[in-house]
Amino acid sequence: MISVREATGPETEQWRAEWARRLRERYVRCYTDPATITREIERSLGNQRDDEGGRVYAVEVGGAVAGFLALGGSRPRRPGQRSLHDLWLAPEHRGRGLGRAAVAWAREHAAADGGGRLAVVTAPGDPAGDALFGAYPLRAQQMVKTVPAGVSLPAGVAGRPMTPVDFALWRDQAIRMYAEEMAASGSRSAADALAASVAEHDELLPEGLRTAGHALWCVTAGDEVVATVWLRHGFLPGMSFVLGVDVEPAHRGRGYGRAAMLVGEQATAAAGDAQLGLNVFGHNTIAMRLYDSLGYQVVEQYRAEDL
Image 1 (cartoon, one colour):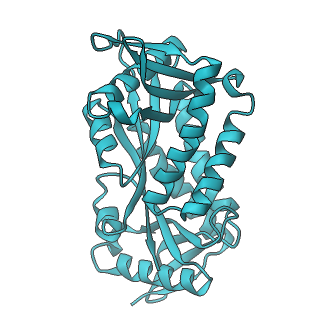
Image 2 (cartoon, rainbow, N blue to C red):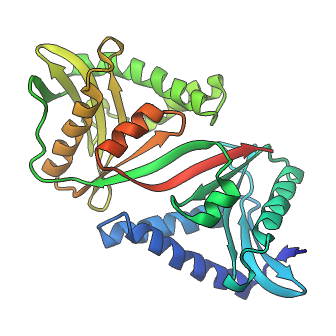
């Protein structure tokens, strides 16, 4: 039904320009700062371009180009994973089963290249993406919200910056909990997840509480710390980002996760950012329901299926 060959240089540039256009359509629906839209387009294009062994392929029907497929190679942090960055078919070739045939080719090619898993990034509400990849396990999703003015906290709840004593207790727990989340999502093995969690915390907070651009807050009820939230201000132009939000186990189910997010929104506005973004693992349905209820919008979904 289809044949696939490596795209020529001009074809690759044609596909890249088309993909950039579609990425812009995706991001303009979610982000308010034009610089963030541009940065996210460049990030996606750069990820595809920098993938070791990655290629852009032309999908042909009857010897004529019907679309393009961009398949990534291995990466140092995930050597067993291959990424299907994009699959595009011209409108006149859609609805004929060509997309499924192209995905089947990509899976076979990724497996032959030594890949044990195929990952895709899709936009929510895309019928073609849902049809082709909706059965792939949801590993994580990116979300964002424009922060309203005058965010109020529930009665009896307050936010305060972490102290050095708070930080020492928080760091060990945060490393462990993040590792458990990664392992539960199926993204990494338990051993790999713990090592990755330690490395990421060391990389992101080299100066601890004094690390520039980062803000760590405790959420208190009375005199007791019930939750924490970790923010990176200016993560993207005009946007802060939630790097961690945790509720103490003894206090879960009492609305303190919501309170922690509201503290984060207050801090975001105070820092001069207009939006607050986050990443949530796909298995964490409780957190996703919370973010939905707070008005966060899904930007992209990361799905991956074992080959």
